[in-house]
Image (cartoon, rainbow, N blue to C red; front, side, top):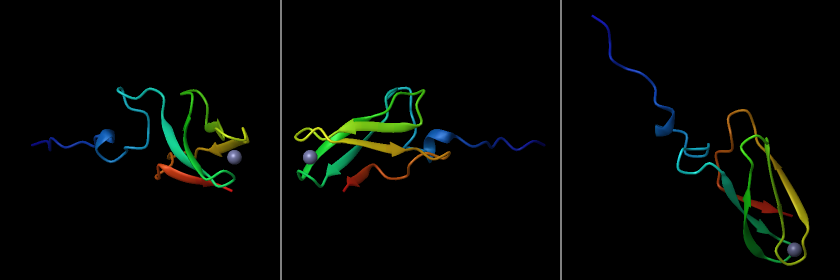
Amino acid sequence: MPFDTYDTDEMHDPGSASPQCPRPWVSILFECCNVYARVYRRPDQMFYRGRCPRCLRVVQLRVGPDGIPARFFRAY
Ligand SMILES: [Zn+2]
């Protein structure tokens, strides 16, 4: 008698792209100006890239093979 069990990725993978959120994003605290900003990632890119809204400093954030577990980061 077969077991009717299987893993559902959406249950334990909130950081990855979901159908409702095709463009994943993270919040970054830009320490240079002490402001928060959202940084978006294109689905075909393996890194987030954004700018500080005040001084326009570019910040880049790599994504690991399993995605990023956290949603908030600091840019020093
Ligand atoms: Zn700044």
